[in-house]
Length: 136
Length: 389
Image (tube, chains in turn yellow, red):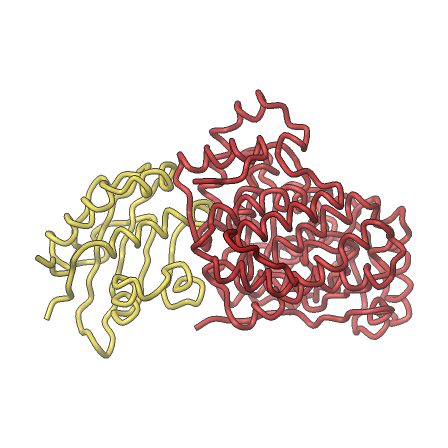
């Protein structure tokens, strides 16, 4: 059964995927910092979805869906329009290439991302493994 | 969507004289003591003087594998002179340090380690232009928008990339490389070959970089042994100088892969010269990636007129050809041959693995090793055993 993106069930499934990934555990073992993944509305999709992931040393300690962006103050924010995020979750777009070309916006401690680019890559890989659909 | 970025390249005999045509008032030269001793800085000053450009200052303290500290020191000196032209004269270390100094000179709010591919609109060029004059034929740093610095505190190399830090002009004059001793010619030449092969076969390869990479591979196989054997072979020097720059532009627009990730790791811990490290690791990574890129290994083999025997893969054939080339120019074929004692190597294994796994170059490798595979990989490369897993 596919999870609906933007629901708590989807966030839970993403957390399970991250915590089940040996690769993520290895490449993110020094990662410290929570993150918002923000899906911005565009011509194809009118909702704004914010997923919150508390990432710590290769583990996802908690995940939830946020209604109000000011609710938490994560160290990182990755955002992009629905069309880009959809391509990303379907693995039709390389997440690092999307960041380099500005299709995805990244805010936070760039030094850490540059030191652990594979952590960012595996994070999105894990998210894309979740069987998920966007809400109608 | 992707980009192809390169500086204006001035190449061939007498390319240095292009400096006499530049506009500017005050130049700041970044170099090292060896380049000063060889008289190359004086040659640069002469050309700049013909353009009416005063050389305000020379910073000659760039060391091999330059540190963040050296960059800070250089910027402090640069700030005293306020140049409108920064001229890097040297090899990859000098040019990388100069690129980082230029960024910090123009953007004092930005630390070198904050340079990353995700930011744009740096506004470089408003205060100064950067000209890179290559004196080695390997890194291609004169034409790339990458910087490798050493974080001495954390014993690791920082690979910093941003399209906007590309030099304005690259001077590729083969005369300046003639002073390179055979060992350095070999080391740097293997760096160029590794750039070209990884640029041609990594996940981000593209039509624009492919052409440069494949031509560079041909040039290295044909001319590197000659350039090592006889440093006064002008044709070989020119072809290798061009090959290095082409490979530089090629790889920076596609990226390097696992040989660089492993080479950075080894270099940061044991100070093996960069080109020697990546060159010796290259055939092992080709074997490791193996059939995932078999078609591309075959294309490279074809380009260098290498016959793939029946029953043998193109990967194995190419890996052997690279080892033959390395041996012909007295390069080590294993980590053991670099002189690193086994006990030191084994003690550093944890850090070697951590560094490789974290390296940005790995993200575009056609095959990415697990931690266990990485340990095995380093074990094989230490002993000189072909990868069979």
